Image: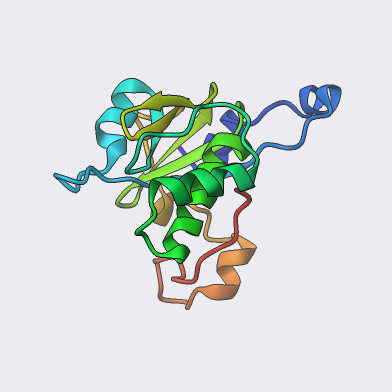
Length: 177
């Protein structure tokens, strides 16, 4: 399945988005591995339970509307011996997962070069030392291979690849979280 077909399959009809006058969907790239086995979570719990998770390392915040400042204060309280830079990073991740990610957003997750496309289907919920969101995975039986499935005539890639390179450029690409 080509990349564009998978993304189109997850796309909300334009007239529905206009009628609701909601902000456009966001694309979230979420990667995770099991801390004990180093196996990508998309191979196990994310796939089996149709979720994505965010490990916090502490009892998660109460799920609900939290402004970024209250999330920062909660992280500072829960992780007082952690460096300020790391606490800020954790607070930004929690804020994004709790407040900015929403139902209907598109999620990409990878296992090597295999890429899975899903759509967030509900609010954040508690787990033990983690938060989770339900996701409807759209291509579990046929993951995309970005090295093979991304069209070679993509303007962005055409500018950054060398003629003999089949690998994507190593510089990160911006995305809308």
